[in-house]
Image (tube, rainbow, N blue to C red):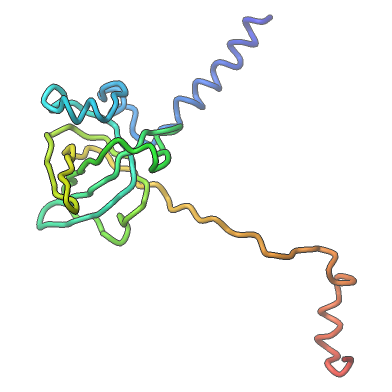
Length: 177
């Protein structure tokens, strides 16, 4: 009986946890297992041409005639390959995508998950220091929806009005007050 229950629970759990990814199954099977970003940056020649899945926050989007370049602040990926907090960043990477990506959509501080092949690395000057960027040729990009937080009203009490027709009565009889 326990074996039946275990099988009964294992099938839905496999379907649930197996379908929680934003990157396609084919690319996930081709991708290298999770490797620390610092290791990828230091040993970029060993991983050249290999597919990786990275995520982070967009810093800047630039477009040229035939491709777009996205600069991303790398952060570790959490459940469903969603980027975690910016405080956990280990560096930066650039994503090259064929075609046009609108900078108003792919704007600063949007979360992004990218699957692509490592091409190399580039060093750019930021203020007075030089920052290495890992270069990736994109195979698949997922832009996470913007998260909006709705603040609750400062005061809400369903019993604030004496009864439900309070507003209705005074709408028809303005001279009442």
